[in-house]
Amino acid sequence: MCPRARVSVLARTLAILAIALSATGCTTTSAQPEEPVLQELVRVPEDAATISEGVDLVAPGGMVLIAPGTYAEEVTVDKDDVTLRGEDRNETIIDGGGTNSFGVFVPADGVRVENLTVHSTQFYGVLVTGMHDENGPLAHGGPGYTELDPERFPPVERFSIDHVTAYNNGLYGIYAFNARHGAITDSYASGSADSGFYVGQCEDCDILVAGNVAERNAIGFENANASDSLTIAGNRFSGNRIGMTLISNYQEAFTPQRENAVFGNLIVDNANGESPAHALGGFGVGLAVNGGQRNVISANRIEGNPTAGILLSNSEDIPAEDNAFSDNAVSGNGVDAVDTSAERALGRGNCFDGAGPATSAPEELRATSCPSDTVAPGGGTTPDVEVPRGMSFLQIPAPPAQPGLDDVETPPQPLPAAVDMPAASEHPLPERTLLEDRAAVR
Image 1 (spheres, helix red, strand yellow):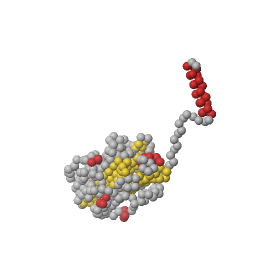
Image 2: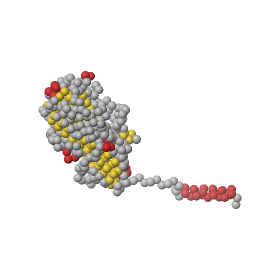
Image 3: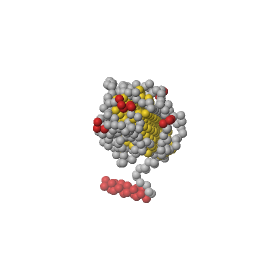
Image 4: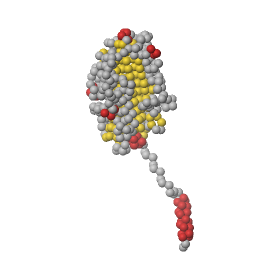
């Protein structure tokens, strides 16, 4: 048989085979893999090798339970009502290696993050935000960001971050931004170059920040434009460069910051050089109110801050006004209360009742009782304080072991639509020993 004939026979054979396969319904296309069956409980690494694979496998409303170990990954929890929980708070560790952008990112509603440690990320330890696209979170974290649009990105609704340790994260330890109806409780943050805890850009926030320890950060706790129903109670914001701030910021939505309840917090000795430098050189301040308005600040211990205990100032043309201070223990600071507001936006209606600052600048500031509509002269000055050079966020010493959840096996109930806020009476004026068993800086 000639070569041409052999080719013809081969061609006929292949054609017959193709017809036969078609007739039997067979094709040469590979079978598609089956979709995994989603589980109510996923154990890592027993059911899934990584935490991210565990999130892929868990059903909405289910729980990913993570065994002790070090997990070098970025975890995105994008399913509603999922619980991400470590079996051992101190030994279940998400390690950013100094290169990952975040440890845990939550863009979904109703998510709990509990009983684990996250450290050494470039930007965020744990981030809850509705500001994201297909490439990940959009919440700010570097220079040059522009106004962020919450109408384009609706806020996350309902979240809980509880018994989480976040340390040596480049900008923020635990960060809720464009999120509402949530709680950050019984957690720890250190080594953040911006703030250990941050709540920002929300109206009708309904957020509770309680029972936390922040130390060795540029700022212990920061609020930018989070307003109307935010309670900060019973926390230890001590041993940072700045203890806490309430600020209005034109680069975010919902200016001005307003109407927080701040009570029962320990805000002392914020002059720790073993911390990252503050971007604007801030140091030695207990509580700063920068353009914040109508905040109620009571029963806090604010002592040992060498620049100022309470610092009031304008934010551009936004004055700090109608902030009511009552029954705080404010003494032993560089100046106990100071109003540095510029002429363009002088403070109005800031007042002190009960125990108040022992010293102030200007002197008449501390004599303004509540309620008040007095316009303060501003222009107050603070003592000159030597500002120590900052440390790299990766060089801050690791924190002491932290208490964990007692029961890790029982899945929790879904988060409620609104947060159960404590009464001010539940958080009276604290002693200096508040939460010191969880702190390295005492």
